Amino acid sequence: MDLWTVCEKGHVHWGRLGGAGLLFRYSPEQGEPSYLLQQRSKSKDYAGRWGIPGGAIREGETPEAAAKREAKEEVGPLPPYRVTGVQVQDCGGNWQFHIVMAEVDRPFPSYCVQETDATGWFTREDMGRLLLHPGLQRWLDEQESERS
Ligand SMILES: [Zn+2]
Image (cartoon, rainbow, N blue to C red; front, top):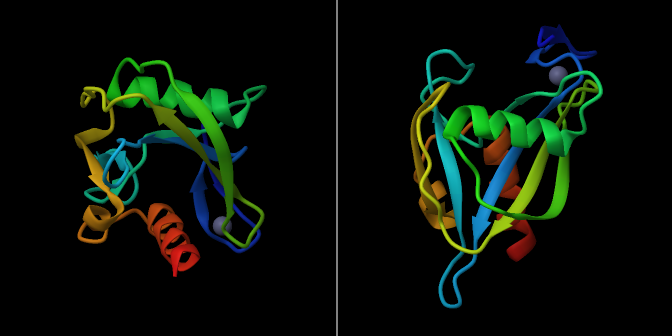
């Protein structure tokens, strides 16, 4: 069962066993890679902000499986993809969110099935102009600091 939980730092998080989401990336032969983002609906925390499809990890589920299940529930059918890595973000209170990096051959159409108000493909530069979920903002900031 998915539940709200309180971590060691006293934050309230969705998912007793942590959370996971899929960050789809399309890398064209020329130009900047773009990423599939989801605008979060009112039924999620940080409503209105842009993040990645995802949610709570369930009992017996790997982070990758949870991310895939949640992404399908939220933005519709997924094409084949290659997992290129998993980045674990800890809030500092022993609660983890797993960002599963997934490479696709082309941008694919996505839909607002659940908990999603809009979807779109954005470069990192585009993302800098969006109001992001704090976890995605943290990922973006880390990317930018690695580059400089
Ligand atoms: Zn926390």
